Image (cartoon, rainbow, N blue to C red; front, side):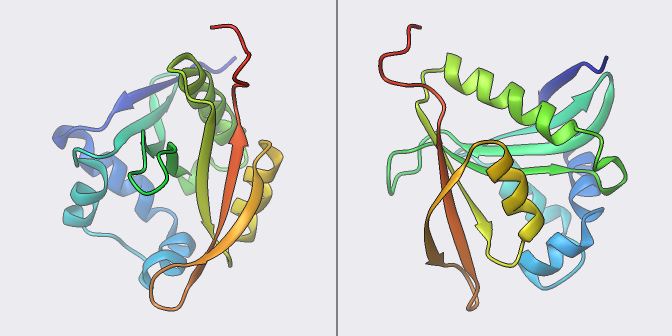
Length: 162
């Protein structure tokens, strides 16, 4: 049985996060038009005061990254910005395990609905998120002529006990 945990990304572990992100060249091409992200880009994405960013660990091995915004100032909802598993570890259920831990912690923190956006061309991500119970509610313009499908999931009903 695998033990999943989350470890906050720090300056010391930023390079690990970059290796995980850069192992997913297809995603980086969809997102940024190039296969690799710089350390500076990683710092802006994962070491900023707005988001909470974690390395996903299975047992004691770093296998992914998870990044979320506790409250988007535009709509007041929490947004899951990124859940990415290292290319070499995909297909092993690690993404589902990491998401289950995130959802459990989000529910404990009182979150009721979580939102996320998926690039419209990223079919595998849409399949994954739909399998986790997310439902598409709109398509919006993104950057450089790209579009994203916005999804949300009710993770805690207002009447659920604490």
